Image (cartoon, rainbow, N blue to C red; front, side, top):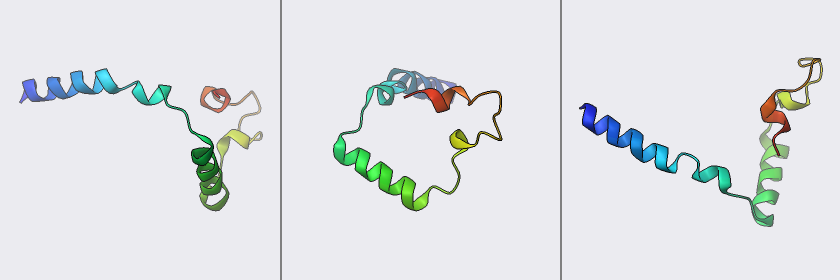
Length: 62
């Protein structure tokens, strides 16, 4: 069993950062904005009362 999980782990490490290099095209950006407008209930990255000392790192990554 351990050999199966280690091969899984090595495969996931190889591909784990590939999605970080992907960018949205203009169609993807439009779809994302539509989803945010129609389905986003709460965005903690815009809640200045929750983070008076500054927003978390993931809110500032562009």
